[in-house]
Every structure is written in C-alpha cells, then in structure tokens.
Image (cartoon, rainbow, N blue to C red; front, side, top):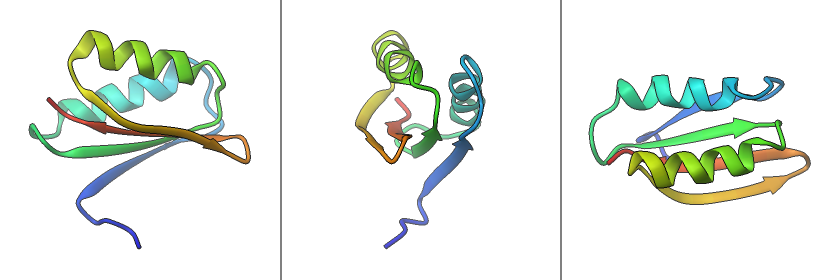
Amino acid sequence: MIDRDILEVDATGLACPMPLLKAKRALNAMQAGQQLRVLATDQGSVRDFRVFAEQSGHLLLESGERDGVYTYLLQKS
C-alpha cells in the first residue's frame, strides 16, 4: 500500500551530496509533520542522512537497504 501523504524523492543513481540536497530542497517546501521518503543508491547516504537528521532536528523515522537501494523516511520538524 502506498501512502499518498508521504512525498517521495527518487535520488537513485546520484552521487553524494545530491541525494541529501534533493531531500533538503523537498523538506524546505513541506510543512511540519509531513513525511518524506528518499530513495538513493549512494552508500555514503547512510551516514549523510543520519548526521543530517541529528543536526537539522528532522526525524529519521526509518532507514533501510534492499537490493542496493537505500530508503529513508524523514519527518519534517
């Protein structure tokens, strides 16, 4: 089931720092409490998104990897 309330950014195939920059741009346009799912293939994004969530105050609700695609679910603070 796809949750239509969650925005999604597909950053697959993009190298660091593009997945994070695309996520920041999307979050800037969102309202507090909204959720953003980011798809990335850059292995460095694992650390990037963890550190970004800690520093920005946005919540990293989920993160995982499947078949080389990393998925992050962020909630805007």
